[in-house]
Amino acid sequence: MQVNEMEIIPVAHREPPLRNSWGAHSEVAARTIVRLTTADGEVGIGETYGDEQVIAGLESARSHVEGMNPYEYRRLRYNVGDDMVYGAIETALLDLIGRIVGEPVYNLLGGKMRESVDFSAYLFYKYADSDFESAAIAPQEVMSPEAMVEEAREFVDSHGFETLKLKGGVLEPDQEIATLQQLAEEFGRDTPMRIDPNGAWTVGTATRIARELRERDLRIEFLEDPVVSMNAHARLKRNIDYPIATNMYVTEFDHIAPAVTTEAVDIILSDHHYWGGLTGNLRLDHTARTFDLGVGMHSNSHLGVSMAAMAHIGAAMPTVRYACDSHYPWMAEDVIKSPIEFEDGAIAPSDEPGLGVELDEDALQQMHKRYQEEDVLAYSSVDSMAAEYADAMADRTDWLPNKPIW
Image (cartoon, rainbow, N blue to C red; front, side):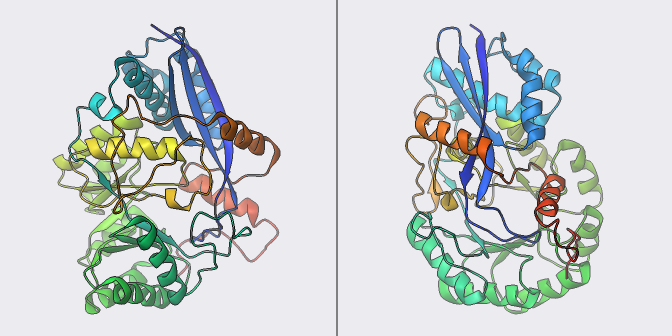
């Protein structure tokens, strides 16, 4: 058996104008679908980021993939030499193998450690959607603590989330403290919460915020990337007693040793796109347990193929201690036939062969055409994100993607 063809299909999908510390998401974002087909007509699919660098990496890997035995993917990791590119291909290979042997992907990873994977309500300050009627959720502007409570209520009522994650670094820090306070008053002071300002705060500001949050007796699970570098996180850790999580400064295995040596972080947010696919996340899980680090899961504006993969790997990883992130509730359209649904804030991975999802060919082609015709927001790393936002703000001389802001 061999892979006969690898298709690389960039797509552009709608997303809301969500705010972060760099600016606002555009309302059209890019992803890439990878589809592998064997000589016997068996198919496997994967999904990854949609920027030109990732697409070029996938194209360069084509000669290693076409003609390969899908079971012999370990060598491919070394031939490709790029964890993000490899991760997209490996996901498609595991989906393909699962379909061939009639087993769900979680069984190819050694079986489930949990029946379902908990996710957090990923709350964003945002501008109003341009099309209220077709928005998936919370189409209104959300730029105040009061508006954020309304947004959170929609997430909790619609999907049953029990953990709230606030994307910070947008309003003045005291306003974001007030937002967490009002969320606790609305949903209960025992509600687990976390805040992620993407490095927008100085060590001094983060120290003040952490101490005030402690005085307010809010249930803050961790601060995620509150400051601007690994060294700044190490300095901050000497001042506060909250755990520190990261997906900005520990994103590959070579980053783990300095993070542990400097005691800069307590929790690594995994991501099967960054960390070398689903098996790479299992390696990360084992490494984290070795150093007594917590594990959660990062997300970006992903579609249903990635959502399915997140559920499979989240179920298979022993060390996931925290509800995982997901942008999926924000997505108003998808490339799969049956969108994945949350139940009580969790997703159970499909028991069907492979990932358990099927591509909607009409939607796939429509979104591919949009990618070809429209200017889309496309990035796959912190640096490329900053560059994309800088390009969008090029006509403003008063703006630079500098951190910290406060």
